[in-house]
Amino acid sequence: MVKRLLGFFYQETSSLNQAAFLLGFFSLLSQFLGFLRDRLLAHMFGAGSELDVYYAAFRIPDFLFVSVASIVSLSVLIPFIIERESAGREALRDFIDSVSSFFGLLMLMVVVPAYFLIPALSGLLFKGFSPAALEKVILISRLMLVSPVILGLSNLFGSLTQAYNRFLIYALAPILYNAGIVIGILLFSSRFGITGAAIGVILGAVLHLLVQVPYLWQSGLLPRLSRKPDWELIKNVVGISLPRTLTLSMSSITFLFLIAMAARMADGSVSILSLSNNIQTISLSLIGVSYSLAAFPTLTRKFQEKDITAFIAQMTTSTRFIIFWSLPLTALLVVLRAQIVRVLLGSGLFDWPATRLTAAAVALFVVSSLFQSLILLFMRGFYSAGFTKKPFYINLLSTAVLGVGTYGLVNLFYRSEAFHFFITSLMKVEDLPASVVLMLPLGFSLGTVLNVAILWVAFEREFPGFSKGIERTLFEGLGAACIMGAVAYAGLNILAGFFNPDTLVGIFFQGFIAGLLGIAAAIFVLSALKSQELSQVSKVLHGRFWKAKVIATDPEIV
Image (cartoon, rainbow, N blue to C red; front, side, top):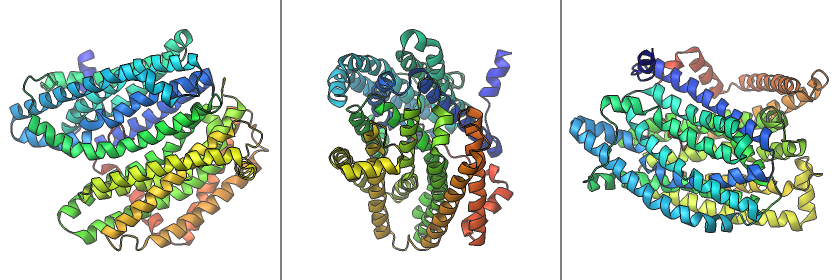
């Protein structure tokens, strides 16, 4: 029985239909578990100092994963694996052993100093925490240092399972990661408090790794330590991976800065910032990641073929579709923000003021969702054309401006009564004393818009004509978004008399039906405007879109 079960999980997925179905289904399941994780944390701890400690302690290990451990990412290693395999099994074996040995040495050199530096770093970053809370941050951060090591090694394992079409293993790994955190919260939080969630993170990372071990063991590909690594080959891997890793680390640095600022605010500010950011990434995952990844192979191929016209056309088309989807979804999320937050988080110790502040923060994050998606597309556009330094410098500049700008917004909020009144009245939180936290998502969104503006100008300068044909899509998207938002808002008011907003079922159906009405209105408007994007989407939905080629994504991106 066990053998048959393992045979199912480790079978090769040769059909593109099977692979696409498996990855899509399990990705949705992983996201559901992520929302369950956040709901449990919010329910059990509320938006207070305990949950603040968890999210603050998470940042340093997460930064190490994104900025160091992701050097052995899927998108970098898979081409090397395929190339080395063509040279023979022994060449592949040497490559795996060399990279795993290098990774182990690298993480040892990073994690050991980090363990001793965490007290000083935590004291510097989270000055607003009480001594007791700071002590707990240090404890949990040190505990979770194991996580980037395990997940980085799992990334290496994932490169091998993906290269050999074991899509089910790859799809299960992130689900088990979130499941481990949920188990940690349920089993250990009653005894160890928020530290139980940290134990769950480690458990999830171990499960993420272990699910891939049986296949690698069976196939003889399980990495081993090498006494004589191929340093020339490692140099090639790092040379390709480093610019991408440094650019990715900018987003981690940005959020670390925002968390550090939230730590100086009222209790619960770190939790509200983190939970609202988790919710707003729905749009980025559904649209930005999907379209940027789908476009990447074609962009790379067309540029290598020196077909610049087709390269620009692919970028233009991808941009149009990101605009087409993002603008209406932004309007829907802004209007339904309170219903979404209450359904996902509003229970237990997560009270009504925390719900209102989180909903307002979601809205301020979401207004930049289009621009967040475009950043991913521009990055891959530059990478496919061989430009790795330019996006890094642009992101570095934008990150610096975002930090300075956010700091200025916080000071302006405190010093200007007019600005304070305008923001709190606009977001309907004028009676809540901790509303200064809203300056953090506002600063993030303004910085993101600036980032896209610079990337857009730089890309247009390199590839003139890229922006042609986008104006119509932008006009249609704005029109559909406004109509969708207005209809959904009206629907909420009308449906308030039919559903009890004090119950989970009532608030869910109020938001769900209002959302459907808004979507129907947007489709009607786009049909009346004869939207080319709507027509193409309709054709795809009527075709066999499930047979599209599966493209692997890196865990740190999604």
